[in-house]
Image (tube, rainbow, N blue to C red):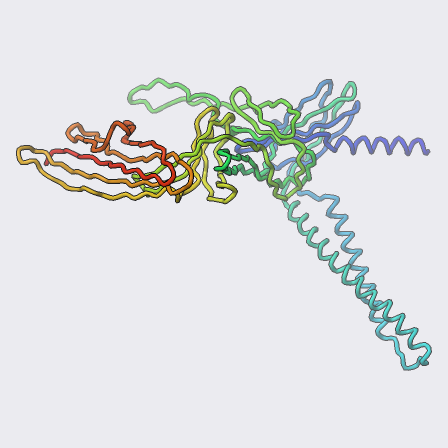
Length: 469
């Protein structure tokens, strides 16, 4: 009999162990996540757990060696009714009954009459009353606090389990001890990428941190979770647009749609790492604990980058000097909101577009008030040529730029020259073109170094010549 009970216990332990994953990994794309759970199988075992409502059998992928999958099932949608809720409900009932009993005991203690007792017994009764009655009040206070916490926890669990789920069940038969990986889409992960840029002017460096904020409402608590944050979207376009002949007076086109297969990632030993695939890149964080319905911020990458500091003056706009850090990234980073710091002081929040690998990146860190800029319009007039059908419009500005800091600083003054798209309208620059660089779009840039307390004067202007008509 004892032997039979032992066999039953071992079978139950084996079944329970199979329902607990040995390892869990989440692949996070820009628009969806995939959970991969790895189980250890001994000859034959059953696996059962909850999956999101949207899951279909064809979305579930299996990976194993020497194992056969049998009795694969996915239930109709149902509401979760976990064992934790039942246990908590029993605990609350027990505490409520205990509170009632103690309150009843105190009512009896208060009815004890001292009139019929002699003086010798009064002190003994008072001591007994004080010990029991006051002790009960203290116990009541503690129990009521615990009851409030338990009710809050019960409400939270009931809210979490209000969603509908599907129950996945499968049986696996393996030749020997083996591992089975089950991968399925998980729609209950909310992930937000963001960056922190902290420029250090003293060391001419940039402290760059990539983070993600994760909120998962799967109903599970994950321990030692491996996170793979990919740079691409799961259902992005995977091929160029189909070619169709262009026929005049024809409106019909045949369209063809392609489905994308999920990316396959290799394992990495480091707890924080970066991996470049053939077409994409991934940031990896391992051994992360994430509880259900709890937000968590995770650092995926942190590095110090050497930068070059310059100052850009937008003469065409506010005419203020803005501090700029230039660097070259050795990784690809997808666009995200960024928190901008300068020497540990927060400057602001800005959306940073995709940072391409091996491309020069420029980040701005707010106004540099140590670069004083004065802009003044010194000439503006219109005139018509007497012996010509042309009319001239002339404008000239003067810039006085001074460095009031104690270090030399590089300055780029940027102005805008009008660009004519009409051959009858001519634009004539009125500035020193030798020291300025002009682009086809009309962007004019002066670059120079200002020593401490040094001032530079630059004149910029243009003349527009166009027909009177």
